[in-house]
Length: 439
Ligand code: H79
Image (cartoon, rainbow, N blue to C red):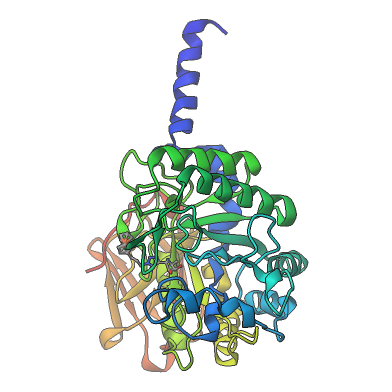
């Protein structure tokens, strides 16, 4: 290779290293992430001693629960009904393909046997390594095991900020020491329980975290496991709860909208994290979403070309609430029938809205109809011909295509409560069609 021909090569490498917003959208990156974009649906689990109080994990420290009291909860954390196999099976029965567990939330408590702090599960009356058991159970059930890990740590004496919510300051903090703690623990998690499918970071917004530390952590984790996915919260570029990444910032592998369905975005992977109830951690009698709400949330994510990471907070006795397990089963039952319209699909070309959403695979376009006002929907025109159509949910629909658009009519008896699915076969690959808004 001549020095001149090295230039484009070096430029490409530099682009990869700087990992700008869309710079990692290379074929290698796409192959690495495909298992995950194909999966579309994962289980988020927020758990720790705070479940004994039923308040929010991390955030209630120094608020609803005095910090001193919060930090002592682990001494009586004894979830004797914890059964890793059951959790993994619950995820599987829900039709989920991966599971993300809080190894450490903002409160600093560690759910595994770590050599770097005594504030961990082995020092509770329970004394069993939750991450060891759950990672093994997930592997057994064919669920990818992933970790949520908070960058900020309101408990650790070396992390500069304190509860409540990072407003307090610690007297003897040392961020360099804390940074080493963070990196050591991630290496330990990889070594003891890897491979980890995703390192799902959070708590990056506070002042002690900066671009330099972010890049260093990103490279550290990439080196630990080049195949693992890393979310954009490793860096400082997240646009609040919309979860998209500011141009030029360290973007890593995917965007992270929180408690909302992400906007349609098919040029960079994303995943909405959303709670089944209202709190991340378990709360007695927390308000739970209906089966229709849960499923439509998943369908809207898939239709926007994103994933859904759906959260449950297990109880202090170690079980996931039976009513939440039941809800997950309902989602799984639906996916068993209609998973072909979700798994391995892309979102579009019709952007999601209150009307529903669309997904596709090859030349097959799936129209998910939510609220068919007057039994009819008008879609904008597309540059392709509808060769045939079929209502996957049963019965027949009337579909007419003209230069002004596509008109769909479904008789009342063929409309479903949650989602009426119409499959359209086109004479062109659906990914050749430009994304379009439905009015
Ligand atoms: O773990 C769950 C929550 O505990 C955690 N993320 C999910 C996955 C969470 N972190 N923050 N929040 C929830 C809400 C906090 C929002 C704010 Fe901010 C923190 C408002 C101001 C500081 C981050 C930075 C969002 C806006 C600016």
